[in-house]
Image (cartoon, rainbow, N blue to C red; front, top):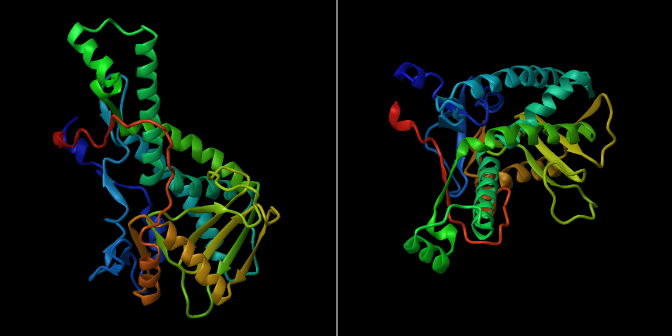
Length: 329
């Protein structure tokens, strides 16, 4: 692959620029204030949406013939973003009304866009890659003990017997292994979203909503009998900032309707929803204004973030390889 191809669409977002522009500073098209959550402090200068929530070659793939392609998946995402943002803009355009009625097709487009916004993020992809690594590690161990692997030379066999095969033979997992699962999981999550009720909130006058590098927040709905569930579970509730002027709640506690109500939040509701967003953030919170209450919440939830945890019950001996072809640029 030539240098021209490598430099094409090199900077790839896991939170789309079009979405991030809904939270920009007043009278600015592409600038936001960024708060470092672990440090609990705002950057001294504004951040461009072109540079945040992005990594080089984030969506690379290795084809069957061994060629590397980092553009094809990105192009597919661009189409999802186009139709998803169109549905989002339609809802935002109705935010002054008491109800929004985007239509079933556009609501479906938006549900998939939002679900993919969750699964394409690093915390979700990292968990999928870990799951893949544990599976390969476990499979290697089973193959060895069943005698299906070639007989190892005596010195290697002794090492394996003494230390275990996964401590002698190191497994490498390429991070593109999570691309197909993240799409399938987004489809499942979107279907559960469409079975739940949607409710939109405007902020109280003089207030605004924030977003983060992990903008789709999921938690258990109030009154659920479960203690720990994933995002596709029927009892999961979602809190999703759509813009600095609109927050979406998707909940099993709300009746699913073709149109959904738009309300003005109380100050208490506004604070609770922003708290959920900031608590779920990984490293960064994005806002149209610098505010001390954001810093205070970052301090309060500095050691908390939304992530999926793989409980494998065994020592990890595999390595996940990310962006392995950067040296070719």
